[in-house]
Length: 213
Image (cartoon, rainbow, N blue to C red; front, top):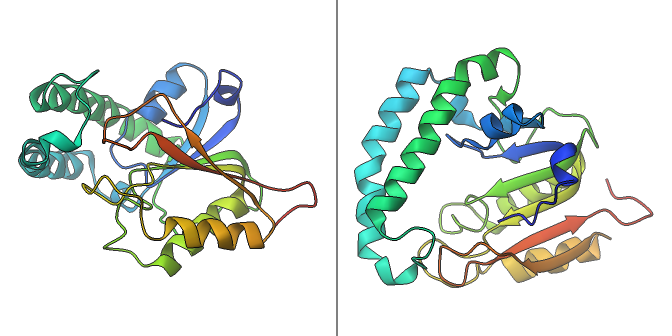
């Protein structure tokens, strides 16, 4: 979903709004360097596990109600998707305690991060920005993306759709224009991953040669 190359996997990566994702665990086992940040990391493994179990029925219900809005290829049914995602969450739960100890999981949230300017090569954000356009304002989205641009040279946000609508977030174009006006190189790129119908594009922001802060 992020068009990451084998060379990208060797770079330092920040995963923003990572939640109970297995990305950090899998990358760490492969020798990668990832820091994940999310306010949910303030809770214990047991608390997070309870939250996952409590929200699972609601997620499954939403998938079934919006079945036609998804591309059922790699995942053949809501039940199959649920099994795959629960397996990924279990990998996260197994990795969470050592990851907290090692500083790989940090209790931080956009739009303000404690990391140094340019500390990371790549910053990623999946299924948070643009997805929750109803819950968070355009100003919040812009501030969050600018903060990601501050701490990383290469920023990628996926997907660009407002949750369950199949339509681009209304914030996408004005934010793209504002970032361009501030001197960032901004492109919308197609990716090979598509689960939410029409959700096969990411927003890719990089610093210009003159630099942006």
